[in-house]
Every structure is written in structure tokens, then in C-alpha cells.
Length: 86
Image 1 (spheres, helix red, strand yellow):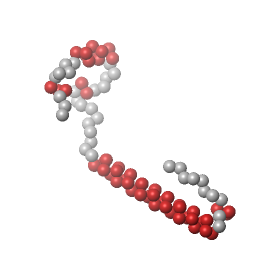
Image 2: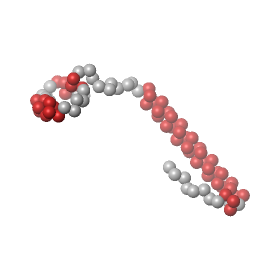
Image 3: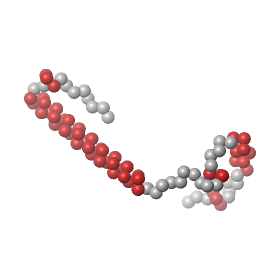
Image 4: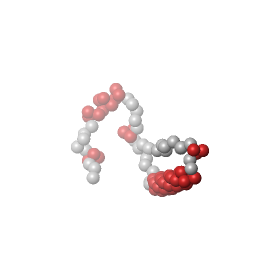
């Protein structure tokens, strides 16, 4: 969010300065509200249970071993009960 450039403060009249101050105060209030909302969202996310990084078994490790996986993956039985979700 970029703000419009500030006018030349020396060239503004007293009335113009008052309007500028009101605009800036409104912008500050909006930013404070956004900051409060983001802090609440961050606090909510921190309360979520931690997800595991990876399982302990070999199947959960990313080995990047193409030559082994190219033969193993086609042999996986996708009808196995382990693949039933819901």
C-alpha cells in the first residue's frame, strides 16, 4: 500500500493543512486496525497444533532417488486401505 505523495507543506493554507492532518490521521487509524487484525491472525495461527515435518518410516522421507522410485511407484497398490481418506 503506497500512499500518495505529500503536497508541498509550505504552499498549503491553514485549511489545507487541517485537511491533510485529517487524512493522515485516518490513514494511521486504518493502518493500526490492519496491524491489530494481522496480530490476531498470527496469534490464531500460532495456537494451531504443530504439523509433523515428516514421518519416521522410509516412505515419508524424500530421498530424491529417481532410479529407485521409478520402479517402486508403479508397483504401489492404490486400492490399498491406506489410501482411503474421508
